[in-house]
Every structure is written in C-alpha cells, then in structure tokens.
Length: 90
Image (cartoon, rainbow, N blue to C red):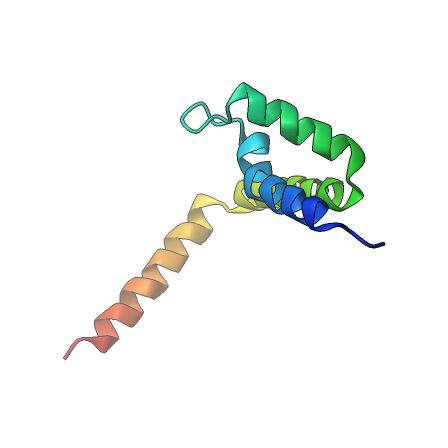
C-alpha cells in the first residue's frame, strides 16, 4: 500500500490526537473541527483505525490490571521498597 505525502501527514496529525480523542478529557478537549476531521480520517484509514484499536486495547488491559492489585499486595510492595531504601543509606 503506497501512501502519498498528504496521506502520511494526515496520519501523523491524526496519531497525535487519537489518545486525546479517546480520553475525552474535559480538561484537554479537541476542538469540534478537529474531532470532525479525525473522525472523517478514521472512517477511511485502516492504519489509524488499527492505532485506535491498539489504544483501546491498552486502555482495557490497564484498567483490568489496576483493578487486580489488592491493598495487601500494595502494602507488601511498599514494605520491600522501604527496606531497600533503608539498605542504601549509610
């Protein structure tokens, strides 16, 4: 699949905005015209569709991973880190 320079630049522009688009963070929203431009590009670009799917899969994996960490494990990990830091002191 050959891409024109214009297509490459559009993919680059889109890749820089996909995460913000997916996050829908009210503190860092994409302007409506950028949302429309990105959605139009995603509708036709398999490469950027794949990147979007990867971001969504990563988000899903991270959210399930953070839910799997229990407080006891976290406390043990903190204890190990504290012990290691005490050993480094003179």
